[in-house]
Length: 326
Image 1 (cartoon, rainbow, N blue to C red):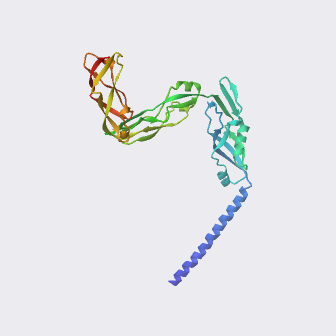
Image 2 (cartoon, helix red, strand yellow):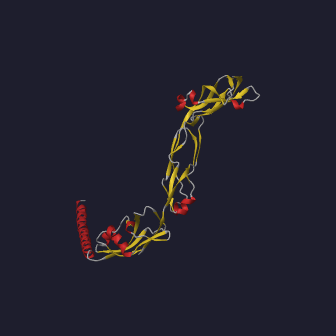
Image 3 (tube, rainbow, N blue to C red):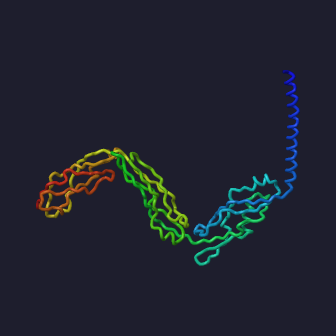
């Protein structure tokens, strides 16, 4: 057994020496390779995205540009370093530097090859030399921006769970938005709609963000807001009743109209949240003398009510009257 272990250890030491020698040779080769490559010039083609900045605030860019520049760059770093150091998230093209020339209703300008290379060179590592760039010319065509306000139309449908109702009006934070773009497009738009929304069996209040639909988003039309906020106040309701005096209106100045009874009961639905807000003076029950006919009864109408009550009923709906000459 001891002899077997001794033989195994000797074989392991012999193989380990070979492995160590192999690793040393590999590391030595890498050092030599890097040393040689550092003195060579490397060329690479890279595709670099670019963004336009500082566009004229009162003009619309008509022509769509490529979003990439294809660059041929060179440097004296090794291929490994070249890979890591030439990557750039974006190149920025500053339109403050452009000169626009008016031609009819359009404004035209361009950056030539040397100007593009100058933009890119300032934003890349200084060790790199730009050999060429494509496209070699960037052309720009603008037109005057036109703007106006248009109403917002909310495309919203909903219903409520049983024994629930609105505790107030449905509100939208925007009744209009400003649109801007090319004159022909702006003049064609009469309103902006929201995306359609359908809600069913609501039993609690809703606060919604609903996107606005840009009908010409691919044709240089811009909205001042991308969405609206909608509030739907929902609460459980109960039935309530209140006594309200009846007011006589539009009587001939030579007559007095006496009615019996001179008070009525108004029943209504109201949410629990608004129950204690209801007061008799919020209602106005009237009879109109111009509606007097051969009948001895006259109809009562409700000319005023709180906005947060509904399903209103008046009892009695008609009252007797006597017309007395002054």
